[in-house]
Length: 314
Ligand SMILES: [Zn+2]
Figure 1 (tube, rainbow, N blue to C red):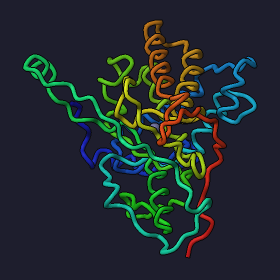
Figure 2: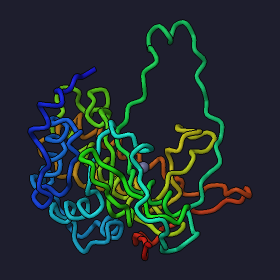
Figure 3: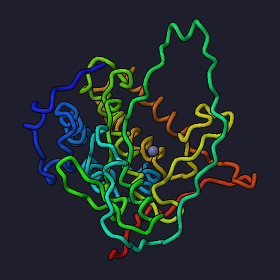
Figure 4: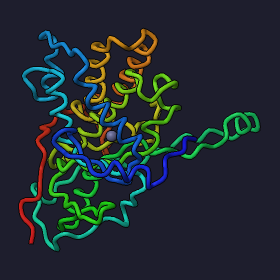
């Protein structure tokens, strides 16, 4: 397990200007993580991303006339604006900003799946000795959308108090508040374990950023493009690690990763294969057909991704 520099060391980095980097970072984020993320974002400029007219599906997905490095940066920066640390306790940091708030599509919320059984591997002496239980690591989550939904359910405007004491009101999921943890950088979750800053590792993280950024979109039933429960028989059976949208986070993460992988001159053939496996894994989580709560088979939809917002608050 990696140790991070003490407080004093990364306080020096301080708050970074928004315009030059695309997103703002809470001072609680260790300096080395901050640098990696900002360099990941800048790395988009170094990729020769080609749009030769064959990417109609990806263009439609990202609502763009042409796919380029600058367009991808703009897409991401519009949906991922503030990054906070896993050290921030969300439940303890949520504040009521206004007692009453009127939300667009009031009362209309996404359908949440009921749980299905989670297969639990039987602990045997052999596997408990060879694979000790590991604490799950935080990778990344879109907390702004969660806070927005909670505010909508309660008809109040909510915000999050960041470590500098300021309260960031969440008026739309596009306020782009995401939380990161050490899992995002951990060698166990890298494409190539050697170095965190290898191009292939940057590409995998960028794909995660685009996935999380997509959770800042959607309205009414598609609000936040929520995950769905993976069905019985799926590799991730029993986990909220699937989706019933054709233009949701898993598709965005996979399609962007495909473009980045094709453009990566500094990725080895082996790394490209691993990146393709990540794409395939993401796409396998998109349930093209699924049983609804009445047991009827339905087809996944392409939703209008326009984001919603608080209309006014008092
Ligand atoms: Zn997600």
